[in-house]
Length: 91
Image (tube, rainbow, N blue to C red):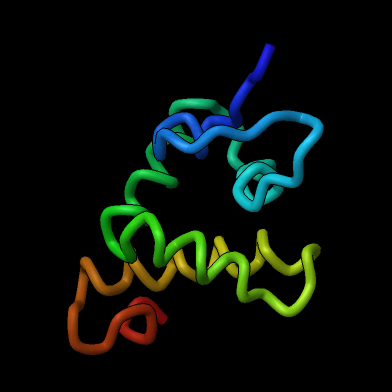
C-alpha cells in the first residue's frame, strides 16, 4: 500500500517510503499534518508545482533540501507582506 507524505498528497504526486521523496524530509520540522499540507500548498501556489519541485531538486545536497524549503517559505511569506522588498522587509 502506498502512503504518500502530506506534501505529495496535496500536490497529487505519488511517493512511498521506499522511493526517495524530495518533499518528505522538508516537512519533518512542521508538527501537524494540516500545517504540512498548508505550507506545501502555499509554496506550490506561489512558485508553481513544477517550480517548487525543481527548486528543491536543485539543492546541492539532499540534507540541504529542508533548509531550501524553509528559505522558500520565508521568502514567499515576505513577498506576500511586501512585494517589493520580500523577506528583507521582515528583518
